[in-house]
Image 1 (cartoon, rainbow, N blue to C red):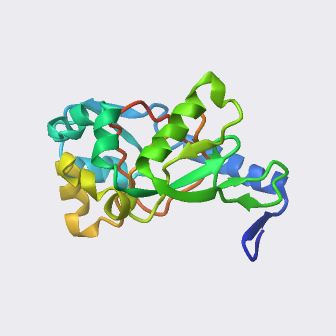
Image 2: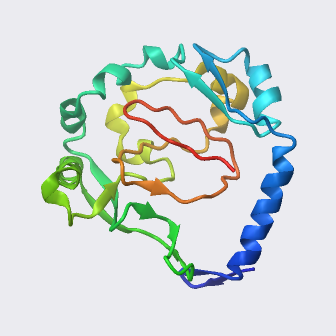
Length: 215
């Protein structure tokens, strides 16, 4: 069971929860493919994507997507100077943690801990990120732009002209059905705890990499 106590989420009977997850994972492994499918350029068709991935809850990796390849962001965002200039007047919400774990169970599993958050100018966030990544930043907090609730629209609208549609996803889900568009930026220590989203996600990696572990 999970009890809600104000801002704390207390996890009960950790062993029982793990047993349930293990049994579900074993059951699902009999029906799901052992490897994540990949394609290059674009998906076979929106109908194929819906039938073979959305309906069956199986992931898909698309490399060098034809629509994303035309986004100005691919060239522009590789230059941190461009981002800092474009967002010089932007106020952004930054998560600060000691170890990069935000929205995560406490070390003793007694509660779900939310990160401290600070609102600051985007260039100040970049300064903190550089200190974190330097040898002098050993005791610096881990910073992460990870705000949900369509942060790209509310805090990064200055970059709107740099991105476009993902055509096959637009057809599959419908442009009017997009719930949120988020902008995330961080460095190696940032992690997201295991969780399940009750909706479909399309991640577009512009710079760096994102590692996703699936159960």
